[in-house]
Structure formats: structure tokens, C-alpha cells
Length: 110
Length: 293
Ligand code: SF4
Ligand code: SF4
Image (cartoon, rainbow over all chains, first blue to last red):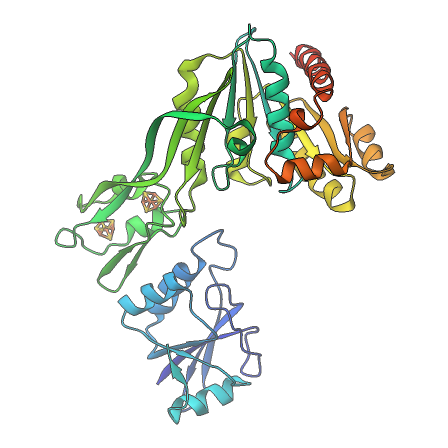
């Protein structure tokens, strides 16, 4: 499965970024092989509506799930209308950890 | 912008809580003592208008402020995404066979409607606030009030200015929103003079520097009122001298003022003798405006 996760750096070892719209990077990880693609947030400097811009960006990548620390109301509405499943990473400490928890169904659905 | 015998003064401060409205209302009241010159007070702090607390106007007229926001007819829409591309505010998004409009982010600029190749967008009015007009003694008073949760202050200020334009007052006092963002710039635009209210603290100085930049960019002559002065704060005076920003007035820190303001009394009620100081300040402002022209 293709999982999109917000992180603070473009690596698998990066820390998780709790912000969706204003995250530093988006990692799209293959949950089986752990192969990934990192994208800098195109909306990071948007004066407003960063969550929406980010939602559009993510939905164009067509992941199976999006995982972040939280989702603003506008971003959530946009992601929902794109039929993207949203999860909160909660206590997870690393990308690896998030993927494990996702696979075992331990993440909270947003 | 304004003709010779009308004068528009904007009162602003780089942050809230400096006593900007106290100064603006006191200035208006001191000028209103000369009833031969009609005065208009414009409360442009549409997010949190409070000048009415001090001037106690009676409102007689009201007008809603509307902007036009897009509505998409999905039957005509091809999901080409052009509307989302042209929108500077991310207020419209095209996500896999859905177009979403976020009314709270929309500025009503009309660009999306114009660009849509299939005419799938039409515009519907949405109320974002209200304009009110009335009198407070000799003073004409008008303000804009933004609806709660609406983030669009600029269109309200713009429409407020347009609404009162036919009044043709001799003197207009504009109470600007605090800060240095777009609504502040919109409220100040077209003024002949900018009165910056600050406090003698490092924070006050920091915000004054930002506000001064706005004056400089808009090329409006400016002066400073130091409020709650409590001893000397040299850095503030040094900065003013350095950039040639005249200090027009110093209002000392006094407990009676703070207590009176808290009770909703205006400054001139508390200290009537200050009226003369304000009138003198006004004379200096007039000279500075003339010099600037
Ligand atoms: S520009 Fe018009 S046709 Fe294209 S996505 Fe927007 S509403 Fe649909
Ligand atoms: S009217 Fe302007 S601000 Fe509103 S959605 Fe259309 S392009 Fe964006």
C-alpha cells in the first residue's frame, strides 16, 4: 500500500511532522518494501489555505492513506471529498513505527 | 487624493492595546469643540470595533457587506482545475471529480468565474459583515463590523470608505485596525497623515518600527503619540529622531486615565485639560501635511 506521511525531513529516519498543511515534507512510503518518495511541501509558504493546497497535492499522488498529527477542517474536508483515508499517528515515534501501527490497525482513523 | 480643505488622519499602532482608540476618539472630541468643521470618525477596526464605547454614537443607518462567492454547477464542470489554479487564496479546490469551495477563504475576486471555460461557475452573494452610520454629538460616526468567524476585513473596510465618501467631512479620523497587515494598509490608504500610537517599551518600539515602514511605503507623513509614558525610554526617542518621525504628543501614565478608560470613559472626560494638547497636535499635523505637499 502507498502511505503518505508528514515528516520534518526527506528521509525514512526523519521525525514525524504533526502539522498537515504546514508540514515540511511528505513521504510516500510503500508499506511492503519501505521504498519511498519525499516531496517538499508545496504549500509551506502559502499565506492561507495551506491545508487545502496540501490536500490537493496529496490527492494527486493517489496514496491509499494519509497519516499526520492532525488535520485542519478545510484539509479534512478536501481529503474526505477525494475519498482519502486519514489517520492520526498519535504516539508513533518514527516512520517505521507509523507503518507498523498502520498495518496492525493500531492507528486512529480521523 | 483629498482636496485642500479636507483632511484625513489615520490613527494606527503596530499592535493592539497601545491606546490607539483612546487617542483617536480624544482627538475627534477635541476637534468637535469647534462645531464649524464637520468631523467624521471612521472605526475601521472591523474585527474588534470599540470606538463606540468612548463616543457612544446613535446608529441610524445600516447596510450589509456582501461579497460574491462562486458556486459550481457540477453538470457543466469538466474538472479542468483552472479555477483552482487561478485562485490565490486556495478557496476553490478541484479534487478527483469534485470541486470544493471554501467560502471562509474566498475573497470574492471573481477570477475563478472569469476563467472557467465551461461557465460552470456562477456567483452568489454572501454576507460577511455590516456597515453602520450615525452621530455621536457633533461627530458623524461610521463603522464596519465583521461577522464572527469571517476572515475578510479588507472588503468591509473598502466598502465602508466608499459608503461614507458622499459625507464630505472637513476632517476624517480613521481608527485603523492594530498591526501592519492588509486591513491596516487598506484603512490607511488615502489618508493625509498617519498618527502612530506607541508605548515606551521594547515591544512598543518594535511594533512602531513596523508601523513606520507602512507609512514609508505608502508615502504618508507620520508622527508619533507616546502613550503611558512613565519616565524616559531613550531608544524610542532615538529611533524617532533617527528616522525623522516627530513625537507630537506624550500622554503620561496616570492611574486616573487607566481607571477611567476601563469604565468606558473617554480621555477628555477624564482629563478635560488635554483637549488643548490635542488641538495643538492637530495644528502641528496640519503644518506637517502642508509641508509634505
Ligand atoms: S474551471 Fe470550471 S470547468 Fe474547470 S474545474 Fe473549475 S468549475 Fe470546473
Ligand atoms: S472568487 Fe476569487 S477568491 Fe473566491 S474562489 Fe474564486 S478565485 Fe478564489
